[in-house]
Length: 460
Image 1: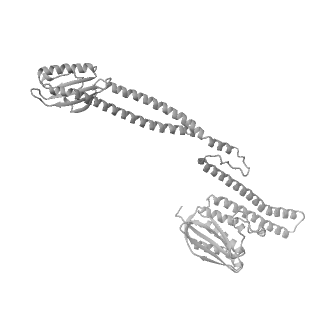
Image 2 (image 1 turned 90 degrees about the vertical axis):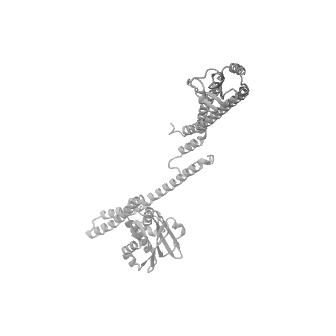
Image 3 (image 1 turned 180 degrees about the horizontal axis):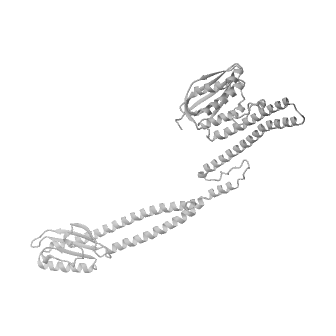
């Protein structure tokens, strides 16, 4: 129950806190009362002692001692036996007082106040005050002891303890019940938030939780949930766009394949004509295979499944290999590659080479013929930046934010390219994210810069 109900858990915490505070308060009160009662008994013993001590000191004759003995009896009787007096002496004549309670050794008492527990567990302890009186005339030195029965005081303490326990127990129950009620009342905004969440319709756009009436503590939660809804809508939009792009990219080669095959079957064809048709169909099939392979690569790369061969490599050396791999297409447009800087990074060599090759391929495709493509490698405290710069037509700013989206191309003329289907830059972004980095792009003064970052880290 307590794991499932926040109200019950809060009530339990209120109860535990109340019990802790009540027990501490009760203990303090009881200890204070006990000390006060003991002090009161000490005062009473001091009063009895000061009342009788002058009579003991002033009487030295046998006659006076007999009067004092009668006085002791009268005092004990008038107190109902609650207060007792003793005079202890080696001379039996000077020994006064009634019988000593069992278990009490009057001679062993030290001067001052003391407490003696009686053997009978039902009886309360005796509080005593002892004093040594020096010899005077014919009277020897004496031990004067006054004792008081603590039963009335202990009875008061026990009654107070019972009342305190009852009040504490009743208060704890009330706090538990009130705490549960208060916590349930305080949880109403959460229930209202939950009700709003249940009213959200799957697939419906622009749905948000109303946070105006929520308490401050729930604002952050509701705003975070609304943020999830926004990201979900964006993800759905991207998915719908992606599906449309995939359908469009695959529809064209499929239409070509179907049309060419139907045309070929419409009448008899020569072997050469059939070979030409099969060659054309093969190109379309290779294009479809390339799209599907790139999509599969993106799917696995974004989950990190392809980043399995991590190693410390020189990025300059890997950049040289990527440039050599693309040398035929670079030479065709009379382009040269210049590598600036170097850094050692812990990366997947295959993925890094592929991402840089995609950037070089993109740069060589739109670079001014006969120009130089620069590869800049710059290391900072947290990231290594790898960028490819080429001279070419400036890209409009509204295109820059979407260049790394799947199947996005700046102009329609690129859509007809059989070698470029708009996934190259998306693959670069996925590889950068696998390595803890991101992508960037800018275009100004006739220079287009495409790049990505890699997180600086030891072996992960």
